[in-house]
Image 1: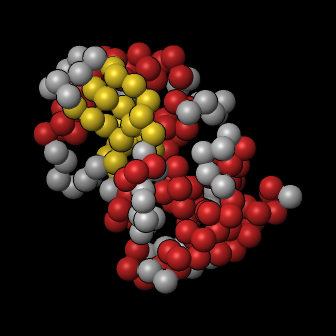
Image 2: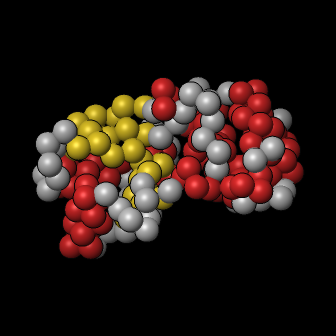
Length: 170
């Protein structure tokens, strides 16, 4: 889905949630809202996938009726959130009762380096070229995360993934 369709869906969801609700997006939908030309297939948001909050239950239920794929992603269970990640969230806008933010772009990039798919590298290149992150700071974050690799089950080849990313930027 493109940006216009995504914003339409967010407005519809915003009409169904309590006032002053906040949702933090990640993944393809977040990048779409930041201007990525690659369309998103779903809406991923930061949340507990086992025990969703009341807000997240409403959103998941509404998504079923809208026939769209929406998923809560417990990002903090997959990667060590970098220092300062809360302060780097990006405010996108108000969609009826729903405020939309993008999760810290460095956290998004770290999760994509960890996974290491070609489309993930394309997404990270987008974040770098648009100035949302720098390669230098991402490298520091990736190297710091390696010390916690077992706790978060990071991919054993995360450093090789980062080297692949660097080669794509050369």
